[in-house]
Image (cartoon, rainbow, N blue to C red; front, side):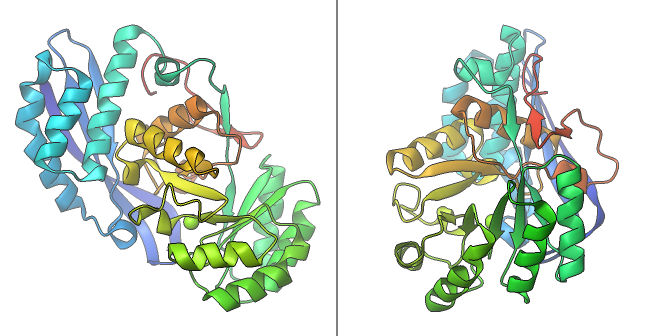
Length: 336
Ligand SMILES: [Mg+2]
């Protein structure tokens, strides 16, 4: 196969303050493979070093190591190709690019969208949430009102960053009573603080609280002590976390799971434990968002997913706009 590997830097419209520092741009690596039949497939590696500890150069090195395997890979099945790459370097972020490109190529060969290669029936669109990071009441309320106006029916508010009670009340007032309000503490609290804070905030009507604390034991304890549903995000990367049943819901990321195939496997573990999976991006590019949409559609995920992140970038062309709080799953062959 012909193999192309290319870095692409995406600039954010405005720098984003996150729990791991300020983000002004991010670099992704696009992989294109084209078989002897002339059909191409594309995928992307989206490591985010401050978040997952994986640098762009690390992911690039893994993809370059895969290159000879892919170049000689015309005769191999997709699963065997992925296994060969994995045995050389098991970096999920790089494997995700290969997995996506193989699914994209398979979809193009079959003339079907990837979701419909995975299963039938699939969702036509995937519900998504808006994310509010404003640290003041007025700013948070304005963002919530804008999100509601734009059609979002689920809003995620970052908490553990000061005046949580005031911002939760302001956001709920701006949203009205029928929209879902989800909180994300990014592990900012200890167990007792999480329990006390969640109890105090629960009157705001909460869909769930994501990662109130880090770690399986602490999450389990918080979940047992509060009435609000608890989700794990960062902790999901720990060994054994997905099947632990320590939380009511688990946030899965395409990049961390190693692509579409990995995400489906992770979601099965989560569901087997009795918990509910949903999907979020790590500021992925359009290919990563499209792949996550196909996976979420095939999994028929009803909870809002954190995939409305392409609008944070400047100068990125894509057809994945949010309408009425959801993104339509691409209907053409392949991913996009
Ligand atoms: Mg989170």
